[in-house]
Structures are given as structure tokens and as C-alpha cells.
Amino acid sequence: MLNRYKILDKRIVLNGGEDASILVFINPDEAEKRMLVDQFMIDEHTLNSALDPDELSRLEYEPNHIAFIFKRPRSITAKENILFKVTSTGVFLFKDQIIIVASEDIPIFEGKIFNRVNSNQDILLKLILRAIYHFLEHLKAINMVTDEFQEKINTSLENKYLIDLFSLAKSLVYYLNAINSNGVLLEKLKINTVKIGFSQEECELLDDIIIENTQCVKQAEIQSNVLASLMDARASIVSNNLNVLMKTLTIITIGIMVPTLIVSIFSMNVDLPLPRNHPSSFWIIIGMALVSVVAFFFFWKRKKW
Image (cartoon, rainbow, N blue to C red; front, side):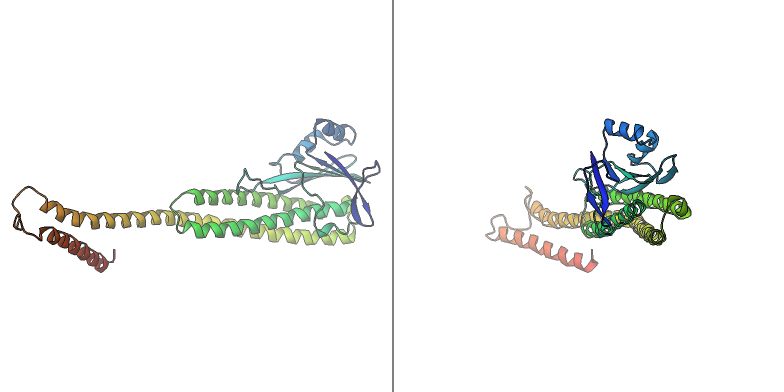
């Protein structure tokens, strides 16, 4: 799908005409890919890399444009549950035009950071900044989900919440790798500011983006380390909960067996201490069973089982 935009009064507006300076390709089909390769001379391998979720962020210089590939979080779907994944986005910067290639339909220019846009280079930087903000939002969501699972796992005997925590830990590994990859790209942008054509204001914005990405990396590292260090402890909690349950069931079983033993003794077809036709034999046996239960209860409390 192709959407055309242009910069009007420092704002990005939809423009269906041929004079559009911003072209956004969402999950391009074969015809659109062929147009990008033949008409805009975009390298086919680079184009496929922009749609590959496993591709690392990078910068490449071509004869008529500069190609950028950066990482951003993938939109969460119900099928993926709590597994957070990343995807790639390609930006191809020409002299008077910019082409954006994404693998999924998302609001490209959302957020207040796009309220004031000066150039195509400015769009590139703000796309990367929006991706960093998106990572931070997902890291905050992961932290909230982790706290929720931590409360549930304290009383749960199932493996479901542990498996969910493993999924979150796996997601953090993906995120940490993607954010570090974006950091490498930002360093390359910093080195090539003149060659790319960044203005002084855009260079200052790039410095701010590098700081934001560094903070994002640190936050992802902290969450990943904390989650990894607590996995064994939470597994031990599940095991301990099972032990407590088994202990409780054992105590209940013993508590039932004691009065059952007394009743069984007096049910044997042999001579018993009580007279055969004593009118209170039944109540005496029941009383002895109840006394045994009370005695076992006090013995249990005294031993602090």
C-alpha cells in the first residue's frame, strides 16, 4: 500500500499528487517492490532487509540516495499474547524526496514530535525518536505485567505464570538487541552529519536522540537483569507452594486416620473392653475418636508443623 505525503507549513499532510515528497510503502506487494527497485534504483537486498524483522540497523550509501534501516517494536496481537517482538523499518533519503518502507500498517507520523517538521532529514530523525519512545512505552508495559505476574505467582501452583515470565524475558532480549542496534546507527549518523545534510538544529536533535536511546538501553538492561535474577526465585516459590500444599494434605490425612483407627479397632469381630450390649458403646467410641482428633490437633500446634 502506498501513501503520499508532503511537508506543508512545517506539517506533514496527506497528498495524493505526483509532487509528494514523502512516499510511505506499507507491506509493499511485488509490483510496488519492483517500482522501488526499477524506478527509484533501491537495492533489492536492502529493500528486503527493510522488511526483515531480524535485520540489524545500518546505514548504506547508494549513488542517488542514502538507505537507513532501524528497529522499532512490533504491534502486539492477541495471538502473540505477551511476547513482545521487534521489526525493521527502511528509510531511503533522496535529494528532494524520502521513501519509508514498513512491514505493517501503523500510524507512521503519530505523536506531537511531528507537529513541526523542517526537512526530510528531520523526518528521519523523528522516526527514530518515535521508535525509541515506542520502546520505552513497551518497557513500561513489560514492567507492569511483570509486577502483576509476581503477585499471582506467589500463590500459584501452576507453570503458566512462569512460562509468561520466560516470554517477557525473551522479549527483553529482543528489545535490548534492537535498541543497541539503533544506538550503532545513531553513532554512524553522528559521524556523517555533514554528508547526510543535517542542519545545526537537526544535529542538536540527534544528540538528544542519542541520549534518549542510551537511557532506553539502560532501562532495558535493568529490567532484563532483574527479571533474569528473579526467575529462579519465582520457580522456587512455586515449588515451595506445592510443598506447603502437600504438607497440609498430609496433616489432614493423618488427622482423619487417627479417629478412623479407633473406630476400626472397635469394629473388629473380637472381644472388646466394652460390654457387648452397653447402651452407650456408640457414643463412647465416637467420643474417643473426637478426643483423638483434638489431641492430634494440639500435638500438631505444639510441634508447629
